[in-house]
Image (cartoon, rainbow, N blue to C red; front, side, top):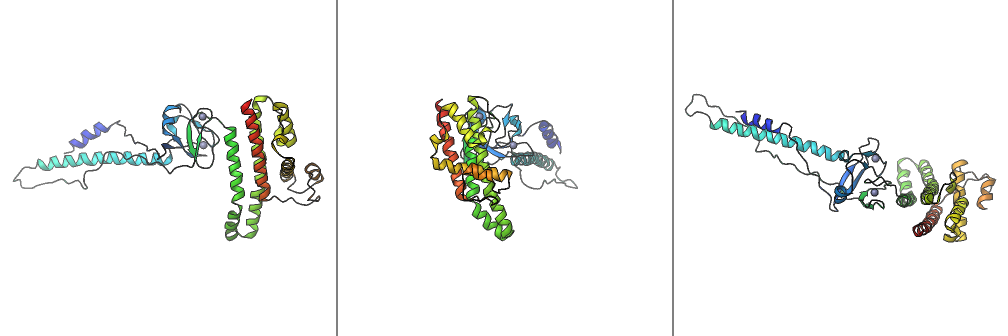
Length: 334
Ligand SMILES: [Zn+2]
Ligand SMILES: [Zn+2]
């Protein structure tokens, strides 16, 4: 009576069960970084995955971990696949047992003294697989400027998963979005922290959140400038950390300086913010004579601590964005 089961098992030996993966309604499939430290989830366009992506190497958009294409299934997809494979195997075994039992029951001799019947509990079990469902849509869809593959992420991405390209302009615009998001959500964070950890900690946290926006902006613009300047030659160390030196470098390279893209008032405000960043990084925000001399900011006396406001951050983002656009325009033309 176990003949059917044995036959089935022999046939199943070494056979693979393939579980399809659905794409979402925009035609994107889920992928996940296999690096345990990262596990970043993103999506890739299904057609591009087939036509542009390489089997040998895929890069994580967040950490640039590199691994062959077979390693990028999401943890959810793998979990689903294991469960599905098990369901299929169980189904096959169950169905083989059932048909074995039926044959056994049919073979019972009539009028015998003892009659035996076999019963396998439950109905016929499914032996087909159900595809892995796609996770919900991701808002930020990106197309790589180098290989034109399309992918989608939550938050931000630094690298193209198909070619590993790091887009200077993409990274810069992501940074600006991050700074704006921090600046805009300070009040919400403050309210939430007021009730959970108390007013003192809430104030400290929010002040630090705003102050980090300054260095975020300065570093983002520095990295952007370095990336865009690459084609013009070697750079002195950290040259783009200083506003005046950066402006001079562009003047030599493309005959345009920061005063071509910003009003003198905007430039003066930006200079104050750069000096504030310097104070925060090197003097815990306490005003010294160097600050007053370099920034021309007469609203503070030596020994005072600087204040960074939401308006400062708005000014910073708006000015570095104007500069970045100016630089891009002239580099695109060159
Ligand atoms: Zn990663
Ligand atoms: Zn690419």
